[in-house]
Image (cartoon, rainbow, N blue to C red; front, side):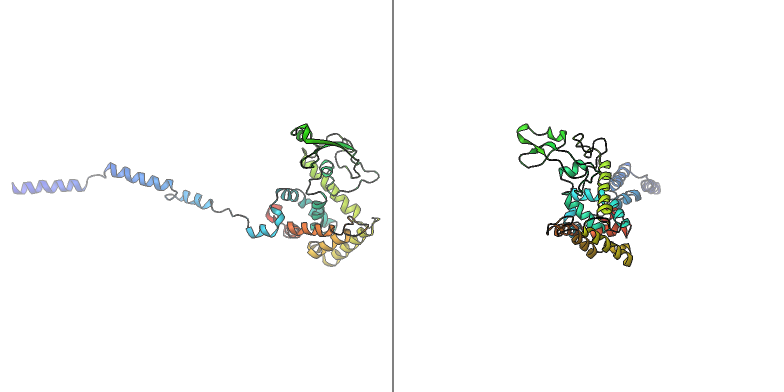
Length: 299
């Protein structure tokens, strides 16, 4: 009897030892595993996702602060639209790109002038004998700010008492709008709603300046001098000399800042230089052309 009791006790102990895992414990373990998965710690795929979130790098703050004007949206937009084609055009015609980009920025007021917005004449070029120019226009001006309006959609945003209408004299600047509307008061907002055509018109204007003005055929000695200087530099050093800061500055001072030049005001070359340095246009054009980078990579 004694041995039978011991035997029964031994059997009970064996059964307890080999019992299956408790369903409660198993459930608790699954809950812990699920929590780990949710936190991204339990699977290889989630680990990869976590790494991906940290792969994109912010632009270098040092690079941004070097060029104080790049933080402005209108500066970025203009350079994005015009710099690639302008750089190619300048190199083809042996003219320093950074200087040209700086000049169009200053002359157009970063694209804010109403004549330039209407005509696409981004360099304020006078119309030739066979060119079409902008006629007199009766346009409103915002009394508080002095801004001249030409888009009917924008004009309707103001109350009549906020505006003052004035007759604007005929502009001597060339009108680069399509032939069907150039030289008329129709569709003054055409380029505002046709951005591709606007850029094309602006590039035609830049091309006119480079080929017609900076030319041996020009009647202005300053342009002929600039043309001769650039040709001599490229012949000696190759097109890479067009990306030299000193050459860009020399070009600016050759065509402006003195009588009978693009702009006779003494401070004009300094303003152009200020823009060139503030945007970092020598570095931008050099990076895009010589290093074959896109605008976004260079900016």
